[in-house]
Image (cartoon, rainbow, N blue to C red):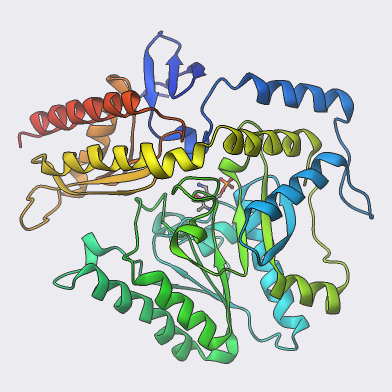
Length: 426
Ligand code: PMP
């Protein structure tokens, strides 16, 4: 590859090392997943012990195994009270595929098979499989084809980009009402569900105004459509609560989960199924003919279970909520005064910086200038992983980041903003 590839060789806590010996603060927690940080020997030991005890057995044909049972119980325990069932997968994308099949099956069992349309949002990210890329609202993925029918996309609650003269609260209501308008346009009898990430991650850390989710909830309740909260990023403490749904008081019917579930140490995901759907499936459906060879893999379940134990025993989510995320957010918002930054925003352990040409008018840079990539390269070369979504710089550090490490993150981010401003002559 002409540009070359950086080889990451080892990691500890919030830091990575590459094959040239550079130490890099991973402010993206891998891909939003290393919630308990790198270098957890107890997770490696758990995998080793489980692989020796029972390396594999499946969850088909009325069989299961202790790690799957224990993990199911724990997930039911930590999730909102309507969730008493879990369907295991190996990734977020598989959980999304599962949700599409389950939602349509649910409505067929309810005697309304014509309810097949799922409403999602522009710029949403729900994975890379056929169902994931279809539900997602990523233009570049849709342009490459393979997209399912009966999926609709409404506007995203992106106040900085599209709010105009409205206050965030007014904008939140206005955008949520697009859901109602779309339901009416397509016809209520065809709509099966709405899906949304509590905070859109890969789309650029789009944090909805406070008014947004209550209005979405009202509309879903009014029309009786299922509400799917994609918790693949927000789950397992990212916003300082177990789930993004807890943070925004969303009452979801279905929750795809992955990433922080095992802190990325082994691949695992799942679909938490709320009572409304579970009862119909059980009472009217019998077996749901769906599953993967490695669904609920014993080693992955054991590691996920241990990971959740660590989150609990070390009080990581409370610390995020009460100590480190308030500190991160305070320091992160300071970057908002930088001449290159049109908006600094964040919640919990995620944040975004909008890089703009003109702070007053919010005018952005021409796409071909690739300012986000310029900044990202400066970051990597100065010991910091920040991701660029076009010209929005985003972070999602491990939840165990300390205040001193937050200071390191902010100092490096500021340095890289300065270097970027200098390079583009701002
Ligand atoms: N949903 C969301 C919200 C995600 O951010 C992602 C991955 N970034 C997925 C689903 C897909 O998960 P996976 O990559 O594990 O298939």
